[in-house]
Length: 349
Ligand SMILES: Nc1nc2c(ncn2[C@@H]2O[C@H](COP(=O)(O)OP(=O)(O)OP(=O)(O)O)[C@@H](O)[C@H]2O)c(=O)[nH]1
Ligand SMILES: [Mg+2]
Image: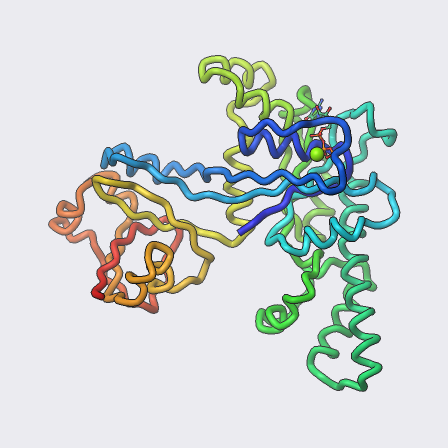
């Protein structure tokens, strides 16, 4: 489960990466082509915090996501992305496109959020178009009359209309068959507009919203610089600083939740006196597979899932109290856990 921080040179990717991970990777001075930062971050979760408050476990474990800060793409209006960057992006499950919304003396072009967002989207689509065309040429040579060829034709004509594959209707099954091509404009993508400190609380331009909706992009504004600095402040100084910029809290937590959702991930919780913990699964995962996240033995010997509402756990605490109050529901292996379910797996090996 990897999300990548991508974007044009000097847009503040590494600054955003530092803000998210609390690491101190070097910023400024354009990154070398092979430079890559990798960091894991905890996914904040108010529900989990409340359960832990009630249960007072020895250990509290949050869900995590891994972010990669990729090397820079050529500046806005450049001539295609370097092949290494395209390859790196193919390996990602979701893209966070950092768009520059502040004046960077090292970048000659003036700030233009919509231009950069458009140019980046065009590059993704162009790379996909080349893949589709090459593949079609090969299939034509072989005289193939396959379903893959039909799909590729459809993909090509969609891209020819300058639309990203995100907006194309094809069955999930078909996309799964085509997964090996690593289409970039198909990946879920969040436009993260990196704004100047004094614009941190200002609304984004309306045209950007229209563009994002048409391209099926999520949008969010953040001031990478502010968020990075906030990390290094004492708690007491934090709110003062944020208030002086017109913000009530860091955008970081909201961003992480957004990214988690974009990766199509949900959490279920387990609890006890030893540990309160969040586990990450893809939406739609069945109960016995979810159990396998904890231990393969639990998946193998799965008997049933005892499912609880986290709000009840926050009130009642101990599992015995939950049982007394009849707040435990029994589910079988085909059950699809929902975000925020508290689960106790019964198993036998
Ligand atoms: N004023 C302001 N400056 C920022 C902000 N974010 C980043 N910068 C500055 O912009 C410059 C580039 O930031 P980086 O985070 O290195 O940008 P990058 O996208 O990783 O750069 P490359 O990897 O070289 O493409 C640095 O001098 C940062 O201090 C911001 O939100 N506000
Ligand atoms: Mg960088």
